[in-house]
Amino acid sequence: MLVYSSLFKLLSMNGVSQLHSKVIQLRIFKVFTWIVRVLLALGFLPSGLKKILGERFTTLDLDTPVGFFFEALYRTGFYWNFLGFMQLLVLVLILIPRTAFLGAILYLPIILNIFIIVVSMNFKGTPYVVGLMVLANLYLLFWDFDKLKKMLKTILEK
Image 1 (cartoon, rainbow, N blue to C red):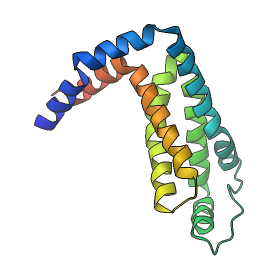
Image 2 (tube, rainbow, N blue to C red):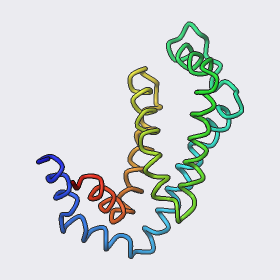
Image 3 (tube, rainbow, N blue to C red):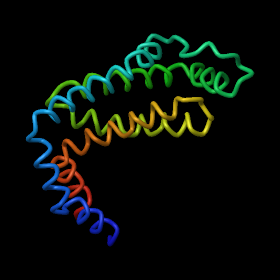
Image 4 (tube, one colour):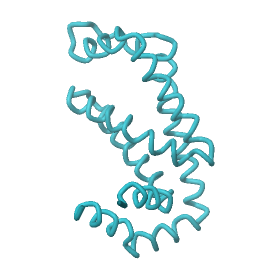
């Protein structure tokens, strides 16, 4: 319980709340937030479409670990389609102002999973791109800091 109360106190810090209040008032950050949402949505469009249509994501040879990994995922069938559906769902949610926070919440586990995969499989260059996507997603969660704070308070209270 001590961990939960410490986490909530951290999120309730006046400094973070004050920074958030100032940032969301500035037009430049409003525009930046929209740019981030669009870029993150575009990041999921090609891979989500390929998966939902049941197409292979890569043509790498099965002798390579990455090619083998993606082929194994592809052969799961419904799970492959489910991954694509979730990517496209998050893409839509993140672009609709009323659902953008839910989209950012759902985006986080997906993009963290992708980040762990690309790092653990030693993808070349991809960890940097996906790492930036993780940071962009964290920015969107900061943008909705008040909603995040309320959600965590509700979850962590007895």
